[in-house]
Amino acid sequence: MYNYLNDDNNPLNTELKPICHLLVLLGAHLIFHVSRIRDNILVGDQYGFREKLSNETAIYTLLNNVLSSFDRRNLVPGLFCDLQKAFDCVNHEIFLVKMKFYGISGVANKLMESYLENRYQRVSVNNSKPNKLSSKWVHVKHGVPQGSILGPLLFLIYINDLSLSINKLANPILFADDTIIIIPNTNPEEFKIILIQ
Image 1 (cartoon, helix red, strand yellow):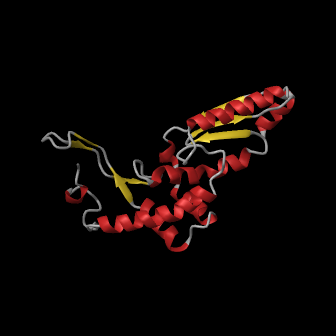
Image 2 (tube, one colour):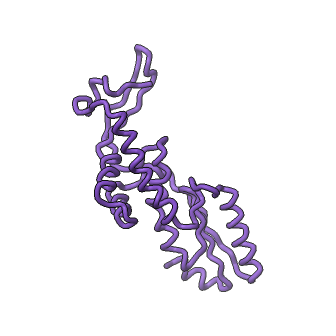
Image 3 (tube, one colour):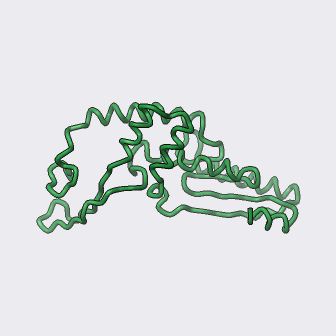
C-alpha cells in the first residue's frame, strides 16, 4: 500500500498528521447524518445502493410500468441514460447546498465540506519497484471519494432531485447513475411536446 504521508512530492505532507482516529469518528458522524437522508429523503424511484432494493426490483418496476401502459393502449417511448464517470461529476458546492436543503447543516455540513474539499490525487505505476512512475499531484475539484462507504450515498443525494423534476411528465427509474425514463402517452404529438419541455 502506498504511504502518501512520506512522499516528498505530496503537496500536503507538511500539513498531515496521523488522523486515523479522527477519520473513524468523522465517518461515523457523517454516516449517522447521511443515513437519515437515505432512509427518509431519497426518492422511491432510486433503486441503487439501497437496502431491500436491487437491479431486479428496478427491472420489475420498469416492466410493470411498460405493461400497464400497453394495457391502457399507450405508446411507451423510453430514454435510457448512463452518466459517464458519474461519481466524478459531483460539484462540491452544489452538493453542500443540497445537503443543507435536506437538513444537514451546521457542524455536519462543515464536516462534509472538510471530507470533500482540498483532496489531491495522482496515478502511480510500479509503485514498489525502482522504476516507479507517478503523475503530478492534482487538486480534486469535483467528485465523491470512490471505494468509500459514503461515496455511493453521496452520489444518490446529489442526483435525488432528478426524479422529482421529471416525474410529473414521465416515469423515471434510477439505479445509481443509470436512468430510465418512460413517457407513456396515447398521442405521438403530445409526446413530442413533452420531450421538448
